[in-house]
Length: 114
Length: 114
Image 1 (spheres, rainbow over the protein chains, first blue to last red):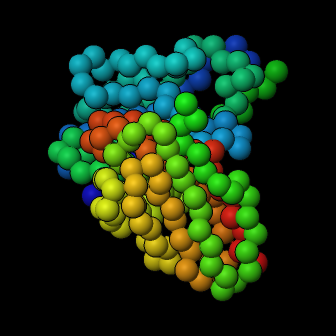
Image 2: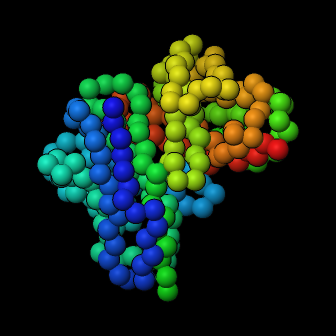
């Protein structure tokens, strides 16, 4: 069975500082990986995805993530955050072998302070 | 395009009442799903559908029913509401349901059961 662990439930950071949100997964098969962002009172929006190819994936709003197969990680990074990045971020994994189910992590709340 | 539309946005029910959460998408997506979001638990899959007339159970299906008579609509029914069903409910859709497809989410229905 697959699982996703987001290692930090909350990450406070000052504006213009770099940030890393950590995600580890476990799976017996190869996976696709996603990061979603949820702003207050809204649904989730796709930030970026790793399907194949380069392990460094760039997404919207200046975010990027790196797939590390040996460490089963998919950490999300941004070199300089803005107040508007305050939101909850979810890491998600789905099975390459087929099926229709995506497993979501518990979420990391990013709080950017002025 | 409206994307994925959920109604109502908020609802308060008494224990034992029934209700239907509506979900409609205008993207001609084959795959639709319902999740519940609870603090610290991320999103958990309730039911999903891979096309009109086809539905299946997710991780937490008990107490909920679904049907899919058209491609556009995927309502979620609470048969006899219980306080444990207090949650935020999200409907999502994707183009084909393949595990490499990102999902498009509605803005959610916030449901309180008294």
